[in-house]
Amino acid sequence: MNLEQFSQYACERVNRYLDQTLSAYTPANTLQEAMRYSLFNGGKRVRPMLTYAVAHLFAEPNELTDASAAAVESVHAYSLIHDDLPAMDDDALRRGKPTCHIQYDEATAILAGDALQTYAFELLSQHHLGKADDQLALIQTLQQASGRHGMVTGQMIDLSNVDKEMTLEDLELMHRHKTGAIIRAAVRMGAQSVGVKNSEQLNALDLYASAIGLAFQVQDDIIDITSDTETLGKTQFSDADANKPTYPKLLGLEGAKALAKRLHNDAIAQVMPFGPKATPLVELANYIIARNH
Amino acid sequence: MNLEQFSQYACERVNRYLDQTLSAYTPANTLQEAMRYSLFNGGKRVRPMLTYAVAHLFAEPNELTDASAAAVESVHAYSLIHDDLPAMDDDALRRGKPTCHIQYDEATAILAGDALQTYAFELLSQHHLGKADDQLALIQTLQQASGRHGMVTGQMIDLSNVDKEMTLEDLELMHRHKTGAIIRAAVRMGAQSVGVKNSEQLNALDLYASAIGLAFQVQDDIIDITSDTETLGKTQFSDADANKPTYPKLLGLEGAKALAKRLHNDAIAQVMPFGPKATPLVELANYIIARNH
Image (cartoon, rainbow over all chains, first blue to last red; front, side):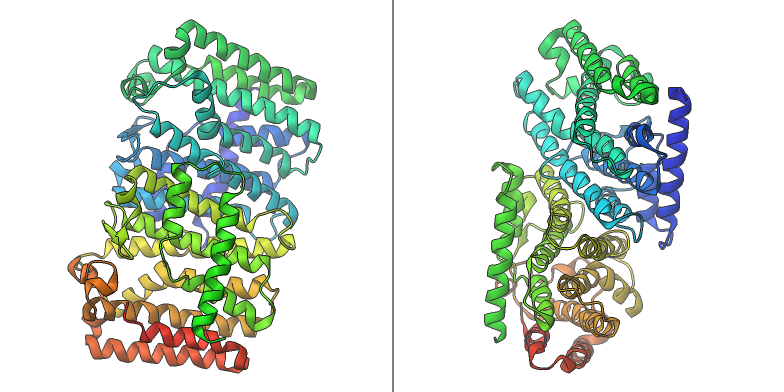
């Protein structure tokens, strides 16, 4: 499968799983609507693609893989809803559509985010999804990446550095927490979902995930100053305008491009030993630094 | 142990556990501070008391009981932070102190709430806390009570009914989700933490929890119109002022008192068969309808 085919496969598979599990047991209501609005808003499903592509290195993805991909995407969706709130980044537009608190209201957006976080743990703790040990390991990985040890701390670092000078080291620390932790979890959970325990393989995949996670952010900063609003689906220069530190600011545009390229090479080096089955992972790394939106 | 002694035992035990687990692995920072500010703000630890008192019916509370009590309290603390936000109940005072978004800022309060939710699942998924099956069952119980199936839906029902007429049935549905679900989880997790599988016993405890959970809300409504601001630690008439439906509005003050009394009797009937070991549970039920703040 090439990247386009793999992307279609992963999107369809995670969307079906999200749809089925969301529908179960719950009557339609505004909370459910807002959760769906934010989950199904045309996101590229990069994290689920990683989860499936990594599982696929070792075995056919199973229902633990589905639950992992869906849980990671649900945490990602919750974080975007809360990041977009007026008290945080105050964004009215996300992927060309009104953000959750604009489409509904602020209270509903806060609660939809809260419920999407719980839903991630609901997915991973379902009865008889797999061995209890495996389910527990997946929950450990996700919580470690999501809360005070990961994503939420990253958002705190981000907010506390608006209008401040930030070193390259600080900027990397912020990204590694804010977005890198969940990307690493998506990769690790893909392997864990099919029972991988080999620490050398887990370590190589973790280095791959770290590298593409950071490359993704560097590329985001590059896109933010080279693309236009229509392509981007959000207001151009929004990060630069907010006086947020970015890689092009610290390294210059060419320096940032060189860093993205180096991270891309590092990532690919880690997954080459897995052979042809790693093609989706290699192509994903290529896509991350080739994309312009 | 009488209730005062039991309360002291449970508070000390859950506070020590929260303190230890929060300190581990994380450097002090504003996020951590805000999490602690809201977790250690003089709350009465009613939910942890329930967890320990129920475990105590069957066996010595163990570390799974500690993790359960702490996780339930952490979800409770997160929900209070988010409920107090300007977009929700907009409360500046909680237990006589500034609410989290007043003490810090709105963004920090949203993130501290988010991180406290994750922390609850961190506590329950810790390595080698107990059997993986038992840990998974506790996670299932907590997620079921916290998200779209429980507490968050309750808060949505609450917000969508401000300034609206509400039937007694709707009011009960709201409370059963908003606060009842977590109280039931606190009770069930106490039993699950010491390995109780007997469905008759679990059922009796669940009926006890449902009854005291609702009694707690009815009594809250009664206190809201009979107590003063100093005793209450929040602005008097805050719920009535916000045009929120309350039991005294629907049933009259005497009718609400009679309902609280009936729920109290129902609760006690369910735990009497457990004998003298149920004393803390009986005294807790007594306290809930005797308290005036």
